[in-house]
Image 1 (spheres, rainbow, N blue to C red):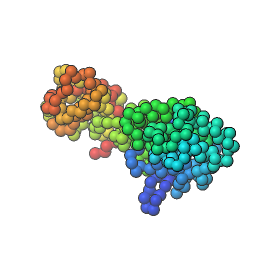
Image 2: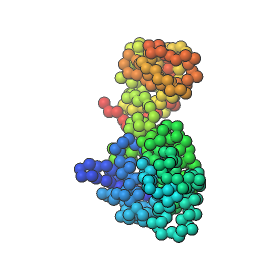
Image 3: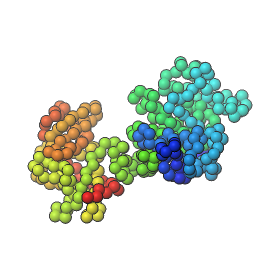
Image 4: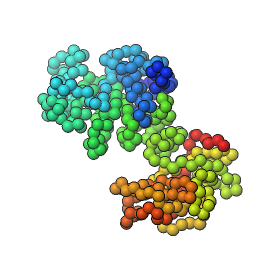
Length: 363
């Protein structure tokens, strides 16, 4: 088991820059996710760590060893691909044994390690089956067992759950995390699924436009995003371009106009530089519904429902103003009956629910 250290990694494909001076450290035994939209460079970075691609610039360390120019089989890494990449003509046992045979392990040792790996993924009784006789989830577990059988220092996962249906994917997320905890192996997961990264990871690296936008725990990147990119990519968010008003000691939002013609006013728990315009964030689940409207005051808004989406445990409401709109996530229990588009609603939130982003908005 080893940690990973990437120093100033860049990857160019002709004139296209896939990765631009990326540096990060993954701790020994950590479950680390690389999260970002399609085309942001996360799979490219994983392939560089695994040795399938040599970086244009930069250095890759696994443990204390510089592995930048080493081929994959000399890196002590196990890789699980999106397509699983099982050999269709080999049994489950032989698929898992493949890497051990390449390493020229003895027959008895191969059998022992294969069965140990299959036990980790609860597939010991499937050893003689062929891949086509397995479900998608079972094939995925065989791929994980094959990667773990060679006892790698690092496990690399390239969107391994993306081909599964929603229910099976949830189940496999739990199994994957349990396997990682039991083995204690340093793991890097590449995914574009925000919920998957948040639920599985010790820490997350957000990639965008070829750069690391933020690294932090799931709680940190969700509640305290570094910038607009991270805030908008992880979950839904209301963003306000606001300016401090010395008369009211609040931040006013010029582009959000209520039905009374007044600008939306934001009262915050802690001030930044009062002379600057700022980008402020409010998560939809932080907004509360009021039974009646309040007098015009900060953090209270009256609007009309422009859209209602029911998703079982909660509702996504779009509250329309004379100018602008605010997204609200409300509990299903708050509504005996579903609200209708066109209804008037009153909403409010607490000052500490407003978060400053580092990105400033200049006049």
